[in-house]
Each structure stands twice: as structure tokens, then as C-alpha cells.
Length: 553
Image (cartoon, rainbow, N blue to C red; front, side, top):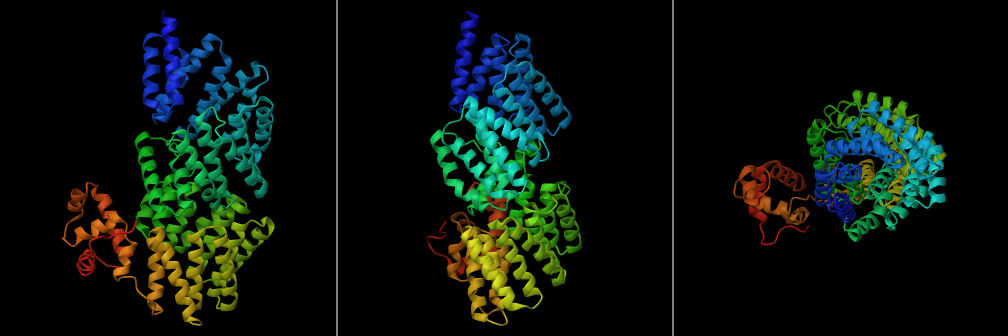
């Protein structure tokens, strides 16, 4: 009778897991465990708890599952639990010693099992836990061969993505990206058994897009990914890694949604005491804050993370924005040495050229741009080519060679437009406007105006401020008239109306049922978008230009 109850409870838990009902599944497995110390129930409960973001309990339950499977002699299931624990201890907890111990346990179990998919999962686990993606190619290829011979789509997708990462790290970007595209086809074609594989592959595609300076690829996959999540009824598929989700949103220019994801992820990491699974969200949110012109906020976000390799570029950018160019240059030189050059160095070299221009050394910026030209020529990768044009154009302008600057900046604009990277194209337009401000005012005004519209539309208030200031210096149109109201979101329009009533942030928050910090954020955005200096000016603006229906977004 007990066996029948256990069997029924396990079946119900697995049904609820498949339906993405994590809380219901957890309750079903806990009900089984109340009557029987069944390892399958511990294993199922671990899966449900993981999706419910209770990582510590998930680890405890999977450890209990491993012990139970070993006791029953079910080595294949124990192997799967051991590989999962090896990854989780490394990726979420950051305990590499325990991770290596579990990996060794998995290797021992695999040696006793007949040849099969377990050998493939062991290979990809080794590859995923390794520090060098290029060195993981052999493991990924071995896993891919096993996956295809055994028709295991979960293993195939993971192996394809890992092989793509390794191929890119070895310098072959086109073939690497093709492998990652194939992995994405597998995970979005409803072939998977384990939803976690979807998240793993999305994470690797995001990482590869960063490494290859090809974030536009995320935009190309975005609609397919979102449609897949809608069709499967699984909106939480990307939630285990908010940084990846935010990166996908940023690639489409949706700064507000990306900001929400990054803020949420940072809060959950702080609450759970775990580490980020890939690029730390603080680094990404700091870069976003710089786009918004919130330099001090960006610096505070990076406090305690400055030494992390994935945060070093953001730290250097904050130092540059703060005028501390010597430290920014030192940080970038250090990270460039660590990467060994190649595609991984492209965004670092591009920022270094900006730092050198800010230091008043255009000759050094030209030398750095030449290094970018070498990488672009060696890889023939569009994103590297666009970055080299932008850096060289800025350096030429800094050296007073306006003809060369215009040629390279025009090329950068065309390349970024082709790559569907509007913010980068707008930055190139702003640089071109600055270069032509003395020699061709009309073109300079046009380019600054186009850049301003892009920055405003994206919510990149910091860059918009720069473009607006340049436009004013050129005698171009300001953006503080009634048309500027169209730049505000509906919520920002509501906040502006309340500013006209001289309400404090706390009072605005109470009226709109939002937090005081959110109200403060909306006020900052309003001041930036309308080019106003303080709340009093905002209140006066609202009274002058009030209208029944404000906001267009």
C-alpha cells in the first residue's frame, strides 16, 4: 500500500514539474517523503526547489537523493545527482573544492557504468567547469558524438553550445556562432526533456555574443526565445540567470526591462548569499547606469566587485567617467594582458582608446586603434571592424585629421546600422558631430540630433545629455519645449504632474503606490530627459506645458 502511495505521489510530482508548477511539485514530493525516504522524491524535490530559487535546500535534497540512489545501487541516477552537485557548488556557491570532489565522484561512477549518455554528460560537465573554453572543445566534441549516437537532444544542445564557445575562444568565430545557432534551434524546437538545458544554452549564447562582440545576435534570437517561452507556458526559463535575460533585453534597446531584471537579480543574490552564474549583474547594471548618466550609482554598484575580471571593464568606464583616467588605463592594460588579445580584447581596446583621448594623448589612441584594426583584419568579424572604425575615427579627430575622422566614423555608423546596434551607431554619430562642429556645422547639427533621438528613445539619459549639450553649443534646437513631453513614459508623466504640486518623493510614492526609491528614479529620469536642473524647474515646466494626456510609452 505504501509502495502504491509512493508511486502515485512521484507520478503527480513529476507531472507538476513538467507543467512548471514548482510549488505544487514540491508539495507532492514532500508528501511522499513524509511516508517514505525515497531518493526519487528527494531528487524531484531538489528540482522543484531549484526553480523556486531555494538553492541551499535544493543542494541538500539532491545530496540526499545521491545517498539514497547509492544505497539502492542505482548508479546511473547517483551519477546524474553528482554531476549536478559539481556544477551547482561551482556556479552558485563558488566552492571549487567541493565541486571538484563531486566531479571526482561522478567520474568514479561513470567508470562503472556501461558506455552511454552518462559519459557524454561527464564530458560536458568537465568542459563547463573548466576555466578555458578552448580547452573544452575535445570534451564537447566527445559529448556531441555520444549525444548523436544515442539521440539525446538535451546532451546534444549542451554539447553544441559548449563546442561553439570553445571554437570562438580558439579564434574561429563564424563556425562557433553556427554551432551556437544550431544549439538554439534544438532548444527552441521543443525537443528537450529538461528545461534547465534551455537556460544553459541561452547562457552560453549570451556569453559567446559578449566574447565575440556580437550582441546583435541576441536581438535576432530574441523573438524566437520569447515565443518559445510563451508556447511552453514557461516564463521562468531565463529567471535563473537575470544577467542573461537582461543582456537579451539590452540587445533590443529595452533598457527599462533590463534594469528591472538586473535589480531583481542583484537583490536575490544578496538575499541568498550566492554568486552570479556568469557575468555579475552589478557589472551590467553599472554599465547601464553609465548610459543613464548616473556615474556615482554605477560606482556604488561595483563596490566590492572591482577585482572581478567580468567587472573590470565597467570599473574602468566608471573611472573614466569620474575623470580618473590613470586608473582606468591601468585597469584596461591589465585586463588586455589577461585576455591575450584577439576578439576578447576588442571592447577593452575600444575603451582604452577613449581613455587615451581623455588624457590628451591622441597618438596613443591612434596606436590602440591600430591594434583594433589588426584584430579586425585577422578575424574579419563585423563587430570588431565597426569598433576599429569608431576608435580610429575618434583618434583621428583628436589628432586634428578631420577628413580621416569623417571617413572612419561614417564607416562605423554604416557598420553599426547594419548590425542593428542603434546605441553604438548613435555614439558614432555623436563623435562625428563633435569632429565636424567647426568645419561643417549643418552636418554636425544633423548627426547630433539623430543621436539625441536614439538616446532619448532608449532611455540612455547620460548619452542624451551629451548630445543635447553639443546641440545647444551648435545653436541647434533644445529639447525643453512641449515636444519633450513625448520623451516621458506614462509613469514619468504622472510623476511630473505630482511635482507640480510640490510633493516630496515619499508623497509621490504614496500617491502612485510605488517605493520612494522608484519615485526618486523617475524624478531623475524626468530631469535628464527634459534638461532641467532641479525639482522646482520641473514643477514650473509641468505648469507651463500641462495637458490632459501626457506620455507616449
